[in-house]
Amino acid sequence: MSRVLRVNCRIIKACLAFALWCCTSFAVAAEVAISSIRFGENGATSRVVLDVDSAIEPRIFLLAGPNRVVIDVPMGAWRGNGANRGLGLIGQFRHGLFDADTYRIVLDLERPALVSSSFALPPREGYNHRYVIDLKSTNAADFAAAVAADRAVASAARPDVASVAPSVPATRPSAIPGAKKVIVLDAGHGGPDPGTLGVLGVNEKHIVLAMAKAIKTELERTGRYTVKLTRDRDFFIPVRERFVLGRKLGADLFISIHADSIQNPTVTGGSVYSLSETASDKEAERLAARENKSDLVAGLDLNEADDEVAGILIDLAQRETLNYSAQFAEILVNEMKRDNPMLSRAHRYANLGMLKAPDVPSVLIECGYLSNKDDARRLGSAEGQRKIARSVSRAVDRYFEHMIALGR
Ligand SMILES: [Zn+2]
Image (cartoon, rainbow, N blue to C red; front, side, top):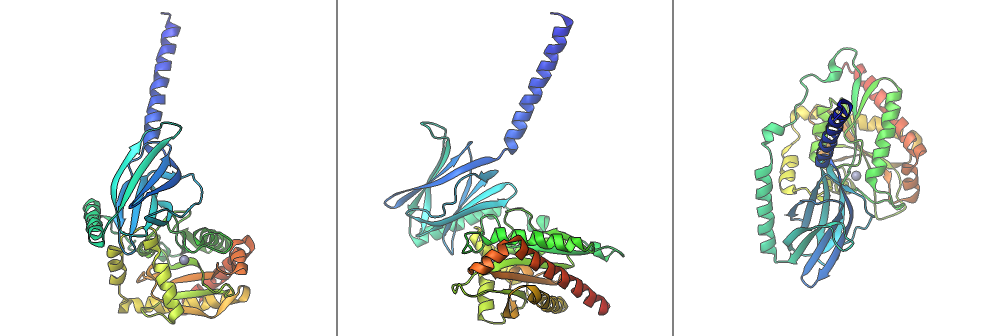
């Protein structure tokens, strides 16, 4: 063999080894495309079939109150259509990115049911990879026992709370002289929790993310603020983790962004909520119940989540923060009123889980009603978003001027 040929052979071998390494490395991190979820029904049994482009081993568990089946697909990505109704034992379902590594499908159960079998099918007869889950109707007691068993498995697998407890910076970044104030914008919902569905067919989670980005642009344009988003894509963050994330990001001000819906399609206008143990009125109470339900919609076990949210009681140290939150809410309502339709009593109080940071003034904006055509169009348009963004930016300016005047 000539020398040139030997060298070439060595290069080819090295290339092949590199290609193989690439294949195996990328195979580990590659997405699994889910192209459809299909349902079948046979008496007391319902079948769920996931069509996927490679073999999967999903984690499947049951939740009660309401009864649900949760399917977590590692590295999953949705490539299918928008159907959201099951068959037989399965009522509605929804899905979305739960965290960076997990695609979650949440099936609402019409009646208590158990997973009687689940298995993968390799490609054959014109089908790609499939994963099959069979559900069998059961009684309430057996369902409750299965939920408890799944919860025991989940808590055994969960890391120690102390080891994942969020660290809060001892000094806020903005406390350094000359540093910019940090504004954290929290686009509501995301992933398997779509929020409310607007009359124009767009989910709240998409509208509020676009709104958060528009507000970020306006605030950054002033050159006076560092602006951070709790999410910049369509993924899920539990309600109780949102304010924790705000604190971790060093927030001086935390603004959660939502859009409401109501049965009466003529109701329009925005409102601003600040935290209070008791709601200012019945509608505010209903709204808090709806917004706090986000975790449940996304398939979280509220048995634990509720305890945590409820456990954070408002103490004396928080009174000052509540006061500032209410002052910012007043300023925000006044600024929003100038350019945007608002409810007549636009500053309201409610017990909202995402506003519970003890030391960060926090408000939640309901930008308007997606159940109203004019509001849905306005909130979905770049111009409508810009108008709200400018109002928020002016309000943030006025709030910090006010704080300086107070010597804070
Ligand atoms: Zn919402």
